[in-house]
Length: 635
Image 1 (cartoon, rainbow, N blue to C red):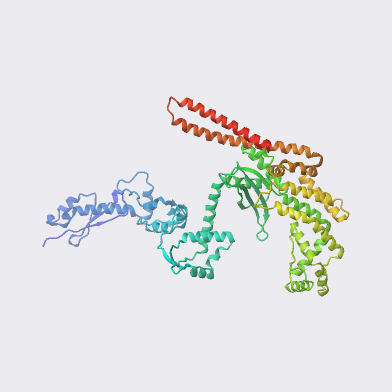
Image 2 (image 1 turned 45 degrees about the vertical axis):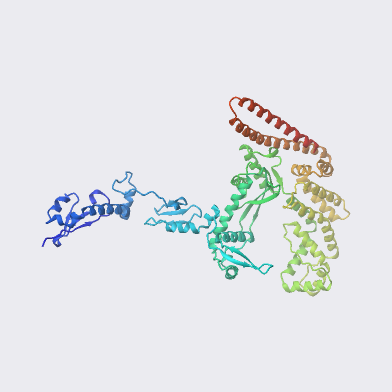
């Protein structure tokens, strides 16, 4: 019986030629290693009946299997040794070339290598990381793209689901059939808007009754976790920010208001930056541009840097018209530093910065009235302590309300003020004045209640409330945000000046003292002409310069004529700046139209057409400037 030779290939993990697969001869149950450096044909010819040997019959198969094994070993390798091969500069001629990636998922993913050498696929839309399959499979990537909410939101795709038929009962006997498709992406987007608008916690989406309610509303409801809700709110913010940036590109000027305050619970200082502008539809808009933590110390330089960073982030550093801040020394330093920065960088500021720094009128009124209220501080403290005593006990407040009902007083409530806000103090005094009889009667039932003003003190409170009523009205008018207020400031300041002059000669000493103290603050902040206030009043088509000529003598006295002339000059200077700005824009538009027409002309008539277009452009510019100037003069 003839013996059969059996060769078994033993693979080594490296792809180097010195470690090529070895052939093992298992004939006659003996183990012989045949080196690849030896002549394989010599070894094979030594076997008996080689013509019938399966080795010869399948030699081509072994050669193909050897090539496939080399390719697989080059792909798999050994962990440490494979890394050595990966960093070789020269390509390995025995390594199989990488096949070109043809799957459409690669346009939406990018390969990211971490510092520890780990590689992962990152989605370009939601920035999530997915594992790299050793087999090169992209099934999990395709599965992620079909459920990626950010991809559908950014590409405007809708979730493809089977539509549901719903029956709507109409007025007639026959009903209406409508189709309904549950789009989870739109539901998540709407949920993020709901959370942001109502300031709900992210945990709200995991409440049991909320999910039960939504499941009752639609059987297709899918639960949204708090982590998903947080990411959706962040995505909604980024989308709205991008939308607002686009709208701000078409805005000519933006007025900025900013303020600093400390959170009582967290003890963190925050700065809010708000932009006010008129959109393309001539509607007044207000948007919060930044709400960030400003670490101490809160110097003017730090505040100006934070404010400038916000303006650059929104690309509106060339569109700032005014910046309104509270009256504080650090704000003065911040605005001076920011103004000099704008001028050094060549940023465009109206009237060379004359309108740049605006003091908050509501804050000026607050400082003014706080000085006046110091004249009746002991009465205010007495009423405040009495209100605290009553509202801190439900039984006391109930007994107080019962007495008010017996006296048939209006069903108002006591108000506890915020000492730093004068208008809340005014409302507290006004509300307490309604219950002055209840205060005395309640003290008879509660011996611990000793906060009862005398009759003379109640009379002072009544006179002070009548005096401060005009300031409360002015504050409410100038603090509006849904209508333009720049044209209303001047007449309201005139009302304040008139009431101060009237009460500064009052027969009541405490009112006279209050008015004199408040006039000192008025002269400090409004003693000089406020251009923003004056220009806003002059541009009101109902009054124009008539209102300025009426109010300035009362406010500025002997300097009224000088200030009126300054306002008129500033008005024309501001107009000239806008003429130059719009002329340049019109110039570019005409040049673009001319160049387009020139390109389409023949060489014979080209020179004549260019000259005609240039002449028409100059004539149009001159006519536009003359008509606008004549309109301003007539205005």
